[in-house]
Amino acid sequence: MNLNGRKFVMVSSTASEVDPDSPTEFQYWEADGVVWGHYSGDTVTHGRFVGTRDGDLVSISYAHALKAGGKAGGQSSSRVEAGDGGRLRLVEEFSFEGDDTVHVSVCAEVS
Image (cartoon, rainbow, N blue to C red; front, top):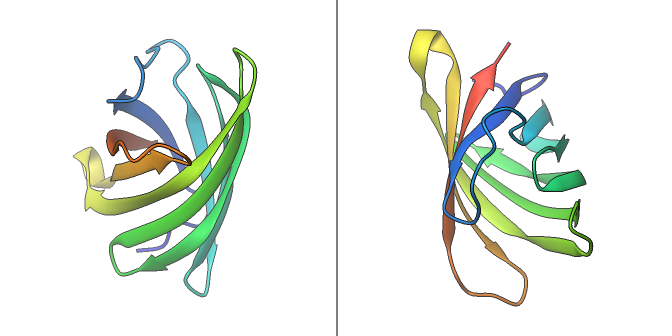
């Protein structure tokens, strides 16, 4: 399993309602266990992340600009799972800097 070049869309999140017509899209890159990428979508104008993958666990730090104004950052830990039709799913637990609340999101791989 390698995340290099894979694209995901958010399908659910406990932190916000996901807009099914323009969900947040994530582009992943990976080399030698290091992952990085970018994202944008319903509540985010642009975001970046960097971290590591060890087996089916991805740990990242992220920062993004919000469409409503302001910025946010934090850390997350995602479990990579087999999804429908051989595509991957990411089940992510994340928190924002300055807030200990743990949120959960699910992202599905798209072609």
